[in-house]
Image: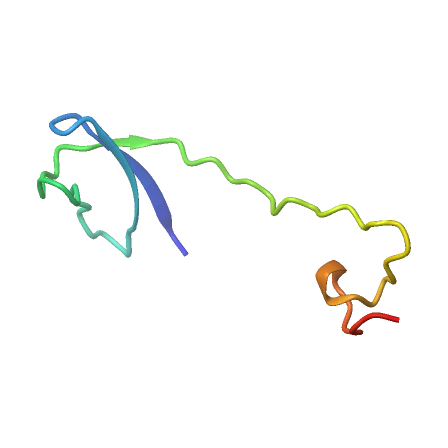
Length: 68
């Protein structure tokens, strides 16, 4: 999905919005379109460390068993 980050100088608000095609984004507070496009950072999903004794098939760690 094409999410972009913008800053509205009129409201001093930073927000993300979905932009499709040549759509003009607008500030959700004031509706203004005089926005600064920001660099969006991509983050990876945090990895949860497996506790001692957890099986590799547990759903929390990517498997499908229900313990044991």
